Image (cartoon, rainbow, N blue to C red; front, top):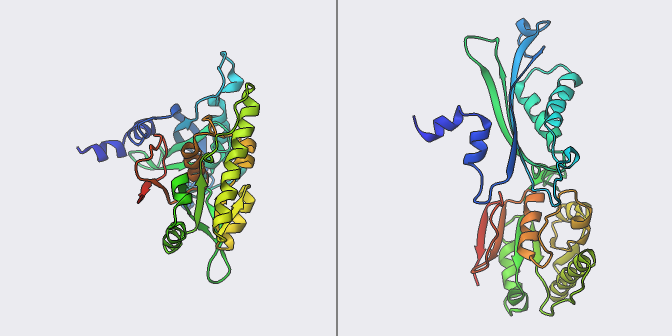
Length: 306
C-alpha cells in the first residue's frame, strides 16, 4: 500500500504530521468521539438517530508567554467538543460535509487555532464507516474583489517582499509592471528602512518604534510610484483589492490588533510578510533571490529575480 493510500485512511493526526512544514506547529487531538444524532439526506435517515464519530486534530500557534500550568492559556479540548455540540444543536443537517465545514470554522475562531483536520464518519449506514475529512486553516476566509459583473468573489493575492535595494533600484517601475501583468492583486511588503531606528529598553516601546519604522519605509516606497497605495487595516486591504489597486502594507494596526500576531521582532520584515500572506490566503509569497525565508509558512513561495 502506498504512503498516499495509508495516509488517506490514517487518523487526521498522521495527515497533519505528514503535511507539516520543517518547523511544525504543536497539535492537539480528539479521537473517536461518538455522538448519536439525526443527520442525513435520505428519507430513511429522517426521524432516526445514528452514531457519528469525530476525529479532529488542531494545529496551534506557540504560546508567547509561559503556560504556568494555566488552562486559560491553552486551547482546551473542551472547545473542540463544544464546537461539535454547538453545530449539532444549531439545526438538522443533511451532509457531513456541511457539518465538517461548520465545526472547522468554529474551531478556527479560537485565537490559538491555526489549522484544523476534521474527520466525521457515520457508523450505522452499512458494514463500515462512511465519512468525510477536510483540512481548513485560519486563512481560509480570503479577500473579496468584484468580478466583471460587479459581484463579489474570493481573491487570493500575491504578497511580495521588496528589500531596500529593490526599492532604490532604477528598474522599480518595470518590476511593478511585471507584477501587475500577472493579473493577480499584489500586496507589497517592506522591511526596515536604511536608517536603523533607535534602540530603547522597554520591549513594548521598541515594538512600536520598529513598526513605525516599517511604515515609514512603506511610505517611502509609495512616494516612488503612484500605483503604490499604503493601507493598514483588513478593511482597507479588502477595499483596495476591490478597486484593483496595488497596495503597500503598513503593519502596525493589523499586528497590534490581531489575536494571532506573530511573536517575531518587527525588524524581521520577511516573517511579518509571511504572516500577512497566510492571513489573507495569498496565492503565493515572493521574495528576492538570496533572502532567507523563515520555515513554517503554508503559503507557496517563489523568488523575485535580483
